[in-house]
Image (tube, rainbow, N blue to C red):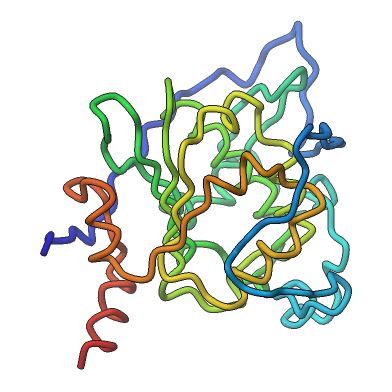
Length: 264
């Protein structure tokens, strides 16, 4: 059985000067439309799911009493008062034809959500996404934090990935209040660059919950069959270790504790 390292690898960022006179800066905001795939089809999760989006009790609706209902990326406002002072740290990035700024201070507690897990097949990257590090949906300025965190994740992914890659989504030890709602996930999918979608070879979901399976089940209208065919459910870390090398895959301590409790 492989040994798991609960420490997280530090992310390496690239500083881009904030002052660039020739460009117009945008706050984390986007108005995007989904490019229609030629192969839109049903996502086969192995479950017979017939769920209405309106009836789905997402964390946005249940935990925040409708405050973020039908929220869109770009809807969050910058914190006012002392929080919006000169001590903020900004990173400028380009997504498509637009420039965006990331408020690095607002996402500082959540940057461990994405890390590099080494390589498979020599040069192909393993990207680890740990959902347990997402913010609670009832935290202050939740929409603003999630918008900046999404831009940070996509920018980090672009820096980490040169060729083909896979994503390992660690869903264990994650309460529902930390899972983003359907609308947010849909906007994220729409904003991901085509190169990243094409080069993704496998999307592994470890310890999938009923809620995650349900969310994937209702993404059928906008996820192509090519993308859905890359999704694989894994029920244990041991099973994950039989698929990919685990030497540099950092498993959060909370997941290791929850697995240990289940074995008692």
